[in-house]
Image (cartoon, rainbow, N blue to C red; front, top):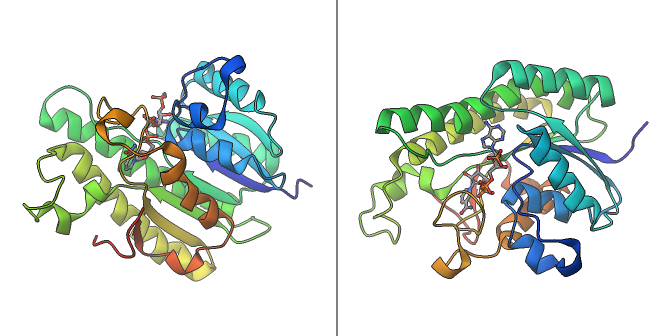
Length: 264
Ligand SMILES: NC(=O)c1ccc[n+]([C@@H]2O[C@H](COP(=O)([O-])OP(=O)(O)OC[C@H]3O[C@@H](n4cnc5c(N)ncnc54)[C@H](OP(=O)(O)O)[C@@H]3O)[C@@H](O)[C@H]2O)c1
């Protein structure tokens, strides 16, 4: 039996190939998204086995190649999962059950900002991926998490943009950022996380709702270092500690990178 901690990360494949010649930690971290960077950090530990969730097989294989070229100490494989599709989530759960028979941790990282279309179209798309996706993943993977050999863990990667208290503060530094669809969907995701706490917390699950803060990634044109976004590695690191059981006091709260406390 695989004794490594088995961790599924959705949306773990956001990475731009930078060529193995020039590959350094900083360069790789600056070219990937949060899920990919989380996988990279976890794989420095031989006791981790990362299931890299990707809605595209091709992107999954590319990301796998990038990670393997770093000679990871842990194990890594790709699993196809589109969190916006119930059929795809159900198939992924079946596949992981067949391959491993259990799961130790789930990171609901996949997310979108809304893209183009009317406000209603953007909101529908954001809700489907960011909130319904987190709900579906929790529902379908809870039976496998219950079979964990350790403490079952879920991290919902949310955003400070989903805070209702912050949205009501017109003097907040990011008050000018509209992003209504994204904000509403992350507030909804926070409630999905709170409901998971209430549903699974009593069984011993550790559930985290975590906002990584403004970070370099491929999320939007705004997620660039030159515009002030911080390195991907920084916003990602607290999740490694959460998966290692080093921040269990932060379970069942909204945690924002760089803040001791942050309002829902
Ligand atoms: N970067 C920030 O400043 C920031 C701040 C707060 C919160 N967050 C949150 O952090 C998480 C990761 O985002 P990121 O910043 O790393 O952006 P990113 O680079 O765009 O990564 C997002 C990932 O989600 C995947 N994805 C989108 N829809 C999906 C679906 N239906 N099924 C499966 N995967 C899907 C994307 O896959 P494709 O490559 O196929 O598109 C991509 O791999 C998101 O939940 C985001 O809201 C980010």
